[in-house]
Image 1 (tube, rainbow, N blue to C red):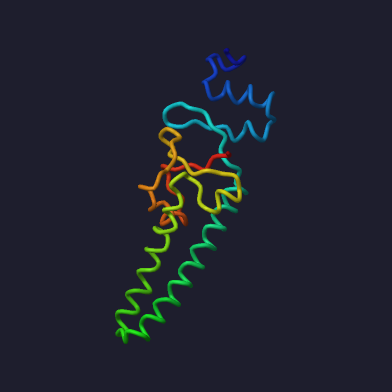
Image 2: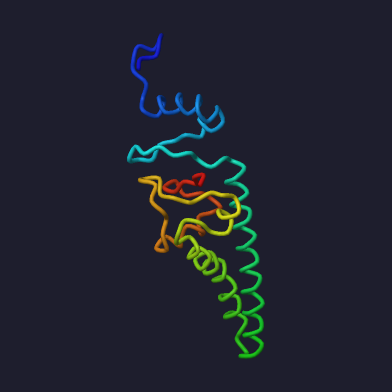
Length: 151
């Protein structure tokens, strides 16, 4: 289909958005996007993505808090030096997100489950999988190769 006044045909994404607007409504059609392989998907709303991030961040903070309690109890019981305790406390900032990221095996950590979204690869829409447990480390600066989708 050629757009009047443009002189060139619609891209598959533009055509799909036009059809989706008639069928699903303007708001959903605006969130229609394309994976690198050309597959179309509905991107999660900004509110859903922020809420999922906030839930995951709260889980991270709680995990670090529990880790700090465990480190302090172990340090008292084992008589660890102050430097060791500080090193263990700092390591929690990296260990907790990776452990929580293991929940991403199916692309759905707690934040995604509660908001109805899923974290997938931008390349082809495949699930992130347990090998990408590092994804939580990047949650403050969302990775460009991952997308949050509805569903």
